[in-house]
Length: 448
Image 1 (tube, rainbow, N blue to C red):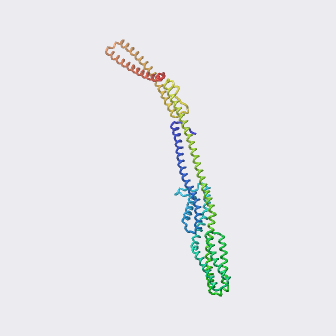
Image 2: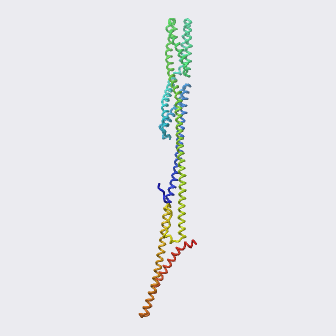
Image 3: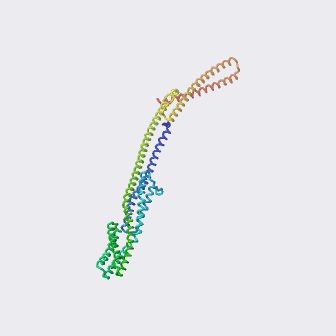
């Protein structure tokens, strides 16, 4: 792992990592809230499917047993159940519903769809049966009354024709059987009780047997009026029984559809309920995962904070060491640092290392300047001494040569100017040397 060696890099690294963790936690929290809203919405829709399955069954039973053709509530429930099921199974971006996010939910919704398609077909067939049988049931009572009236007319005609008591008794029983059939067929159409259908079937067989026997009876044939009403009764009976068989057949189909709805409703409800629990478990698993990510991010954030603290402490220690070296330089002998430069530990930051190297270079240059100044001062003093000695020698030579006074003064003046220049240069060098010495001795004085 590459370790940062500069203060700016360390600060940027700690700040960048901490910023990344904070942004990550905020983004994760926002995303988790959005996903939780969507999950809650989807779970609500899936839970509503359970209610709709029960509503469909309830409306079906209500329509059948109340003998009504009002399918509005049933159609609404069926349409909403199917559209919501398709949204759950295939997703609907417009409504914010996503497709199943794991195979278990998808498999369970496919199972619900497999139950729903035949279930819906049975409901539609039941509606068609009801729409077909209701008009026939509306004329059932008038038909029963007409059969009763014809059966009663047969009795009256037989009495008027003075037929035997057996004929009158049998024709009277026909009136009772017509009423019995009407009663039990009505009960069967309302309650779908198989026992009522058996009673109706027995009454129908007996009525049919009796009416056919009247047609073949010689006594009946010998009475034109009686035979005519019996033939009319039989013709209507045959039409009536075809009508009843059709109504009963349609009602049997409705009852079969009802039985299917009753049986499969529980399976559909249970499958949808399992899907809801799978959605709930999946949502809780996602929330747990998001919480784990948050905890991990918080732990990483704490680690970064500790790392930043340790790194800051390390930087402070290195700065204190640098300041200590600067104090030693300020209160020590500068000349000593020419052989012993200002150095820090090898793990110090690059900026401090660079600053220490510049200070060492500066101290080295100061020492060189002091050394050069001392050397120059010595040379200047030597030059002044030599010039003075040379001037004295020249004056002695001039005295011996006998040069006039005017030339002698001119020559002395030039020699004095040269001496002044040499002396002034020496004095300047002495001043510079004193300044450097003062720079060198000042930290020691301050230390005292």
